[in-house]
Structures are given as structure tokens and as C-alpha cells.
Image (cartoon, rainbow, N blue to C red; front, top):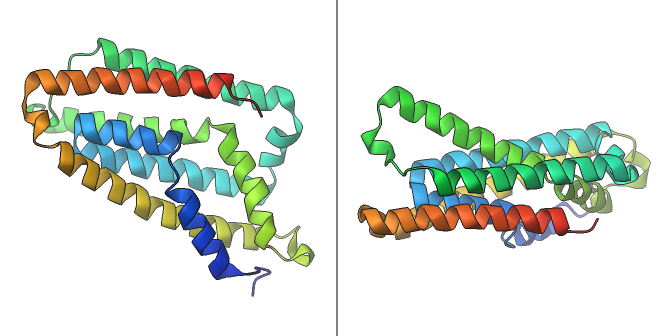
Length: 210
């Protein structure tokens, strides 16, 4: 149907891939544990939005540019690595202020930045684009290879299951960390750890090979 082969096998494989730890998982965990459930949920939605854009790019054939151009791939990869390192340094240098102590307008502004960071973290990871190009076609009838519809259906299915997993991850990790975040010193330590984690992920992305 719609040029899709073995849809339920795709769903199962997608779920298994979604729960496999990666940059997105570590980003959400870092936000949830150090900054609470709301930040974790917002970051998960940001990651999901970035994944949706990758899905759209794959359907339109734009992701092929990254696959075929070493220059484009390197540019996106290093931009993503630099952004993660920037987030890490910013987290290390910033003074932690619990969201509940901020004014409502500032809290909304803060979460908007967290959301955008999630989008960029996913969008600036070229491996996600290559993943969509390599994984989705395996479940598409060759006769529909030039059609965007099966790409969109499969991509949206993958993004949906991934979003559910990311939201669960954010909620449960934040709940587990909620008690220890009440202690200022521990919370500061968690914020610094998150900063180091982002820097590590950035370096890892920069050093990774295509």
C-alpha cells in the first residue's frame, strides 16, 4: 500500500533504533536531569521537529546532496559539532536558575531557546539525514522510488515512535532526578556535567567519519 513494503517490520525496526542511545538521547537526558521535566519535554519536541525536517528533506531528495557532497557533509557536521560545544561551554559558564524562580515571560523565552537548541542539535547532525536515505528505501517498492509519499509516511511513522520514546525518556529521567535537583550544589554539579556532556558529543561528532 502506498508503495510501502513490510510496514510493521519497519515499525519494529524503527522502535529498536529509536531506543538505541545516540546524540539525541544524551541531549534529552542532559536537559531533563539538570533542568527538569519541562525542559526535557521541550527538548524532545525540538529533536522531533528536527527529525521531521530531515524526513521532509529526504522525501524531497535534498538529503542526497549531503550523501554525494563531501564538502556539504563536512560543513553540516562541523557546524553541528561547534554548536554542541557552544552549548556545553554556555552550560559550564552559566549560573543555574531554577525555572520556577523565573518570571513567566522569561521561562517561556528560556524554553523557546531549549526547543530551538533541540531542533538544531538534530538538524545539524548529517548522520540523521544519511540514516533516512539509507533506512527508508529498504521498505519502499522500487516502482515508487521517485515518489515522495512513501518516504513521508515512513518518515512520519519513525518520527512519531521516536517522539513518544523521547517524551517518555524526558519525563522519567526528570522524575528520577527531581529530588536531587532540590539541593543547589548537586544541581550545579548536574548542570556542569551536562555542559561537559555536550562538549564531548560535539567533539565526538567532529571526529566521526562519514
